[in-house]
Length: 148
Image 1 (tube, rainbow, N blue to C red):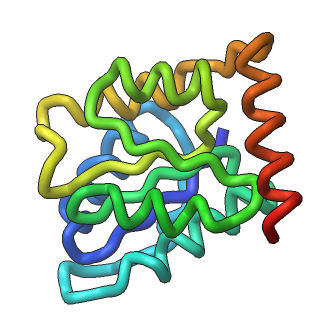
Image 2: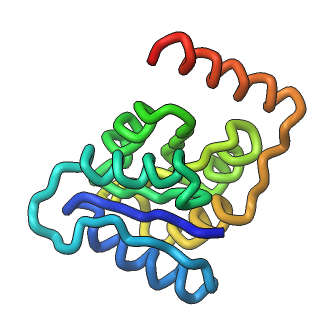
């Protein structure tokens, strides 16, 4: 599994922490920015990570901004992306299992640091359940096709 990861300035410190966790887990990743805590616009990094995931250059993505909300909104504009804001291990697990989320959004200012490793591990380890959830994800894809 290859991860594309990106953040704006508000998520930069947490992104660096997550990169260390990914290294420790042996998960390869591409850091698509930002490269510092200097002000940067989250839509630029959300688009870069979302396009990498949608194009298959990454299997999943992780995006971090101040709250994770802006990143998830922007990433979800890209067809084929299902970005889920997760604040707990349970929400990361259910986002993967029930929604086939392919991007995890986190809040650098709102996610408790102690919770981050378990959230990221759950996102990486959980597989999509399919079944009735697959039919619902197919409906999401149908909406995308109606409204380019």
